[in-house]
Amino acid sequence: MATTIRNIVILTGAGISAESGIDTFRAGANGGPSLWEQHRVEDVATPEAFARDPDLVHRFYDMRRAAIQTKRPNPAHVALARLDAEWPGSLLIVTQNVDDLHERAGAPLGHNQRLLHMHGEHLKAWCTSCDIRSPWRKELSSRPPCPVCGARGLRPDVVWFGEMPYRMGDIYAALREADLFVSIGTSGAVYPAAGFVQNAVELGVHTLELNLEESQGSRMFHETRLGVASEVVPTWVDEILGRD
Ligand code: BV8
Image (tube, rainbow, N blue to C red; front, side, top):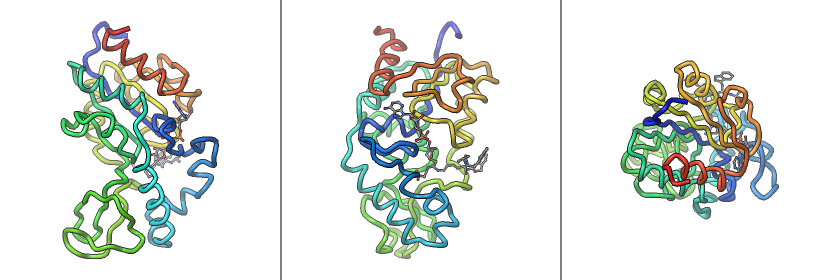
């Protein structure tokens, strides 16, 4: 591992929010059915699905948008917010999650852009008429008017399968500058996010995985630590901040 670590890129997935009671895509919180067991991806998370049955897609996202507002950040989110507040080098947290638990774990995250939602956010609505994204906490099933242009063409501001993830240029630029890439709570099943570890290894970056179980990308990491995020993430943050 590089002697001094200055620039860190962290990728988070549904596993970091599991202990906050948010279903992951492969396992339901509290043992219930996973998101993808409740709905087929191609029925609810593709542009084609939205064109075919917008009511079903709106119901799916209205349910999740309402649910995350009843959840709270857990010690893993709080530990990353502490790292963000205290890390002297560069840090970019790239989340695949569309919940706002990273932001709610520590105000600094939102303001100084050290957090990036590559797959969008539940709490934003995107107007397909004026192309503006607006903060949104309520439902979209009743086709409410866009707060900017008044058109009734709002969609969830999430990246569906087949759509280009957000700010890929910023992510690759941060990986090129990184000394350390850390992946937390992700199964490594969805691309291009699942390809970041390979990109990092090819760039000579040290790679660390923190996950409940082996993932599809585990063999590519220099180091894997297994356990629940609420335990392994605070321990790692203490270590990297030299507090252990
Ligand atoms: C694109 C938003 C063109 C919506 C999401 C290459 C090869 C094969 C396929 C492809 C490829 N390139 C592209 C594709 C197609 C596709 C894809 O990857 N398909 C897969 C299914 C094979 N990708 C796309 O369509 C992407 N777009 O490629 O555009 C392009 C190409 C190149 C460069 C640029 C653009 C768009 C994908 C984004 C889709 N939208 N979310 C919504 O949320 O509804 S994806 C969604 O699913 C999440 O955001 C996340 O990315 C993924 C779920 O994965 P995880 O977060 O990892 O969750 P999962 O449940 O799977 O795993 C949880 C993990 O946590 C587990 O490992 C578990 O052990 C662990 N865990 C559980 N509890 C805990 C824990 N860990 C710690 N503590 C715990 N307590």
